[in-house]
Length: 429
Image (cartoon, rainbow, N blue to C red; front, side):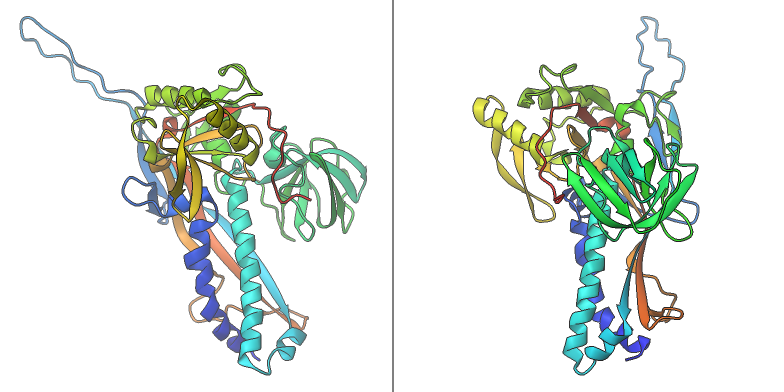
């Protein structure tokens, strides 16, 4: 079977990637991509990017005059923000022998093609979940120690201390690079051949040596020619300006424009108890966000989403069931086929990829999804999506997307971080 023939059968199953997988990759993306009236703002990217206006001060200027004098003109301060674009890729290969072995009937090869596309689809789904919680840097973990040039221990997924299991974003077969803390110097790159998880630590074994590794180095995805540091789309970590470490977003700066910032509360400091999250913590968060932004989750709960870990969802649910003063109303359906706990009409959903100890209050209409190219095959016009691999009896196909996640109204979101969140409900073994 030629590469043209392979492409022919691939196209019959390829629509699953474009039409079904991306919109429901995560509960967050399901509600962004499928947002109807009142939903998030979805943009099409042009060659010069997407530009939007952000209002940095409240409207002022009303006065009173017993003699009828008019006040001076005044206007709210506006600044322009810009969305850039990020490029994401997934590649799969098929061996020539596999093609020959399944070429006797059309049905058998269609199954092989479906298998490859399903794997690519799963890689896309997991990758979308990862970057939706990241900070745009693409950090998968931080090194805590090294044994030699092929072994190291990692912690801190997303580069966030205490965010969960060190192996959350790492697995066998990944090709990664180890960089210094700043991401400017690459120690080396290699394939992960083994991962041993123990609590929130993970020991990685590399297939080839990486010299010079040390504590506080970072792990990122890589290719044979470069690495992905600072090449990921935005995620909730930097959109929400977690820890005040991400003031700059969309070329706007929260340090000079305070209204271009997210409300950030710390459990145990801004709430009564870091170990015992309650419904009143959520009330405090929603009320403060409403005061800052005018977007009130208590009045318009359908515009908001609470996103947290399964461990914290359990703790919140226990407080809801025990008190019921505001409490859980019921289980509710949300877009993408998900169910959520309803807190005064606000859906609370859990995601095992969410950094431990945090709950986000997301204002969906203020999130923005920017498409330059939705997920599709790497091919030009009528060229085949399958490419012969040089000096190898195999073919390769790749999928790509050019996209970005952002917000046009940063102060409409909020978070509480620092909760005690020791239960892990994830795929890490």
